[in-house]
Image (tube, rainbow, N blue to C red; front, top):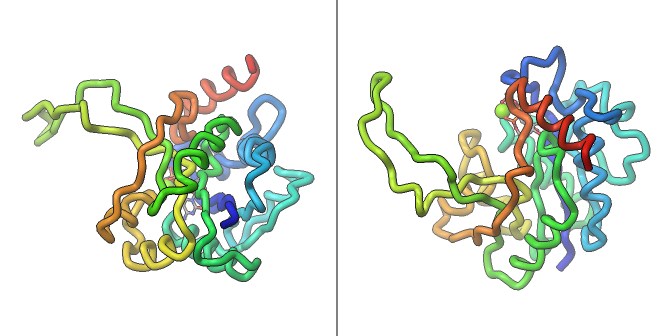
Length: 224
Ligand code: CTP
Ligand code: MG
């Protein structure tokens, strides 16, 4: 099987506080998505990368000059819809059901090629696939009406990251079944009764979500 990367890049970045979509903010001289795509381009085992843009996107070409992969202007109303539409575009490019798809957030721009390699190493011979994730470090509280009502056992809790690596032929029906509510691929796969492998990611592989994330990301990129 081949491995493909699929990068959802069609969000509006509501929580980021930026004037436009967060994937086009500049960090250390390059756009967020340019950093992301550069890391993926340094993974030789990827047979190709497909970026999913919003249909009215006018910024990608300037933000990621020289990008050598495929672009599909099929972004949907949710991340799940953008990924599902992107999978259909990958099929049009010749991807087969048994091929692996590594879905990676455009906004996770501190990605390192080594982490992608580690995920592929851990999952390539797996039945189902898996994802980068990190054990939760903080004590977890259950809230009701602004008060902490219980402390959860954090030992078996992990935070999901991306890439998330699944077979095209399993991920398509899983997302079709999961609808717009799923915020990652693994949850759609779990809903079909499968158990994705958890592969240790990195603290640095955080997603730009809030305004302060730009500050931290820029500092880390500048000291690499
Ligand atoms: N994404 C997408 N299509 C959507 C929503 C999100 O392709 N309809 C992409 C984003 O561009 C991002 C990734 O999915 O790279 C992770 O989503 P998230 O961090 O939620 O980004 P946004 O939805 O853009 O941000 P927010 O939820 O704050 O609006
Ligand atoms: Mg979102």
